[in-house]
Length: 410
Picture 1 (cartoon, rainbow, N blue to C red):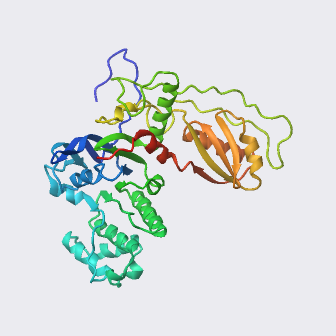
Picture 2: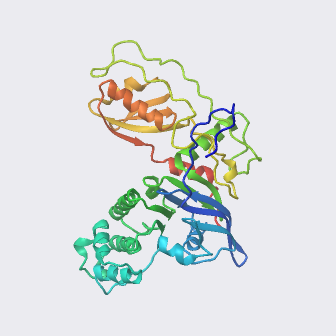
Picture 3: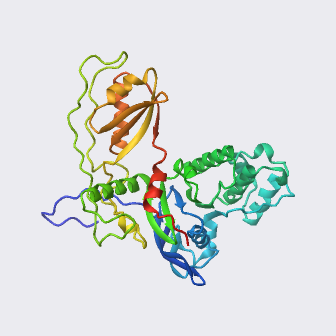
């Protein structure tokens, strides 16, 4: 390593992001005269659960078929773990597990026979992996059952077990929870979270937002073949909040239109007054004390300030990448004892927009990011309030989808 020139300022350690596990650049495809994909670009980082969202006919399955080496793109480039899907499809197939929508299973054999057959097809060196997959997918107790007698949810588990036999690095799942009952959906969701904890990168296509909001770390929204927006859910919400604030002051173009080159929406200005706590003794069990000051807008959170968003066509440029901003969000806090005491301690504090009690839980509207949630919990605990649950607002993904799409289909 060469030394820095004399008199040059000392530089801190350079933090490099890991290379994306899935890299899509300017992907386009056409069936006849219909453009089903138009200049789609996004990245999926290692260990992420990436939700690919869009209405029926948006181009989700076409994108997945290209990623799974089943369809060659007419334009653009797709890499899985650094390998181009058109240059070396055999290597890509060894590193992915692909589960298509409404895929059939062989029904006249047992669960174990089904998995042993595919383990042999994948040239898995030892059938011990079948036992490991049966345990992971919780199918061991029915391993001798004929597949035809199983429920749809169990067959979906069996499909997941099949694609895990060769220990792929990337899982590509097209509508894995379609047509499942509520219990089966929950079981599939929990299995996906467990697979992520094992280091798998999961690309999950769906048009059901509720099944994605609990598991996805990042999302991409597709409409009429164009990528509308992509990135971490919290970061996208912050960009939208900044655009709303800029629009309120006449500094931003309307949403769903391309922004001028180099456009960056300004952060919302938030004024934090000193905590206007009401005078008098707090409710029983609550110790008086101000909420800690609001976190600064830059320098916190999992993403570095001004991280570049993936380049792409469509309307993605209308939502420029920003540092983690102080956007307005809601969180539901459950506490031991009377929730009124917790509400009293939070109401009027810096960064707290509103506090209300609904069904025994304290619903807190706040200005900030995840750091503010940690400060809220810390303040309550230090004040003698037992916090037993913290649940972020669940409809954030639905709100993002409605804001960035126009409800159009091809």
